Amino acid sequence: MTQPKIQITLLGRFEITLDGRPVLAGMAQSRKIQLLVQYLLLQYGRPASHGELTTALWGNAGDADMSLRAVMHRFRAMAAKESPALSNCILTSRGAYVWNMDLDCEVDIFTIRRLAEEVESETDPDRRAELRRRIIDRYTGRLLPDSAGEPWVERQRVWLHNLYKDTLFSLIEYGKEREELEQVVELCRRGLCADPYDERLYVEQILALENMGRTREAEELTRKAAENGCLHSDGRGRNLNGSYKRMQQSELAMETDLERILKEVCETEAGGAYLCGYDTFRSICRVQLRMRARYDISLFLVTVSIVPPVARPGAGRTAAAMRVLENVLCRTLRGSDVVARYSDTRFVLLLGGLACDGSSPMERVRAEFYRRPEHDGYLLTYRLHTLENTPAVRLTQRGRGTKNKK
Image 1: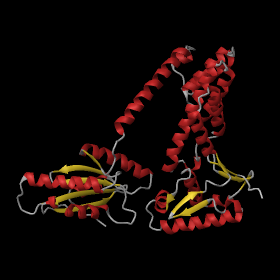
Image 2 (image 1 turned 90 degrees about the vertical axis):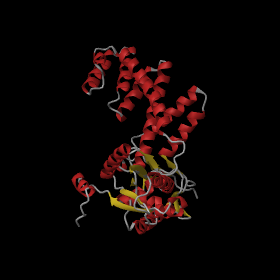
Image 3 (image 1 turned 90 degrees about the horizontal axis):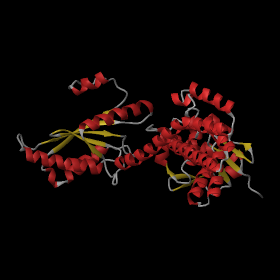
Image 4 (image 1 turned 60 degrees about the vertical axis):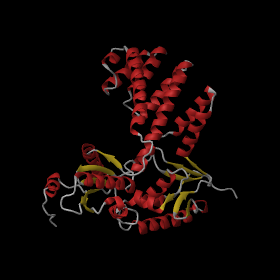
């Protein structure tokens, strides 16, 4: 018996069909079921652990484990009731979940990724153009617009849209080289549906219309672009070639700058916590607090001090103990944590959540510090503060030594 064809749309909307018939309508009643399926699809066949899923979908909620099991059970029951073809679409193995890639299932973003890989390996210009047209045809909108606020959606959304724009402009250049100006106009129109404020798309389309002798259409498009603020003053005066050349120069300069910036910001070895100066630490905290205001992420501010074994230790002795502590902090904490020297005897830390088992990373730090013979009898103390959206005045009062009021 022929298996029914499963088609999944993630671009522009979220829909699952079976032989062209929409299925799993019950997912619309459960936001978490939708997010679960979407998350696994975006992994392209990579297994996602139980802990990864609970963190992505529930954050640090205390009942996340049971909630995930309940949602998984409800989805599997729903899928099995809908059709046997869907009963094993999510597989479980060693505490991880994965979308079954062996199903007769077409997912639009999977198809686009495969076509992009073929473009990279193809050497024939005409064949490359045909593959790019197929990418454009399958890009029917932004990725999962109803789930755009999820961080794991945003990363893929940006990548897919950049791929679409690069593909679109490559086809425009291909059409200009072969003087297929009608094709250039159509590509620009499609591109402006996705990016209605892209000046280059307006300029490309206006120039193509002018070269085809369609002056009235070019003038109308120029007026529309000017109203949207998408053309410079000389563009409105019809001197578009100069504007176009400056855009090309700007884009080339941005690409060069981007490559340089990526080399400067990417770390070759990113193991352990990030060590920085206190001024940088403050800037990072401010950015993270803004992230905390938008996304439900847990942040902890920690002060760590060493206490000398004698009343008046030498400065060299204390400095040596601080070097030991710095090494322990950088090696014991995670790569997402931030460490800065605050004073001669104190560090300040920004931690992004607790361990998966609920334990405090500071207990690991303390244990590791005391295991080092070089700690020289110094004691380690720390204070851990949960960073909620707390008014700055309250934080300042705490910093001055006032007690927390419950």
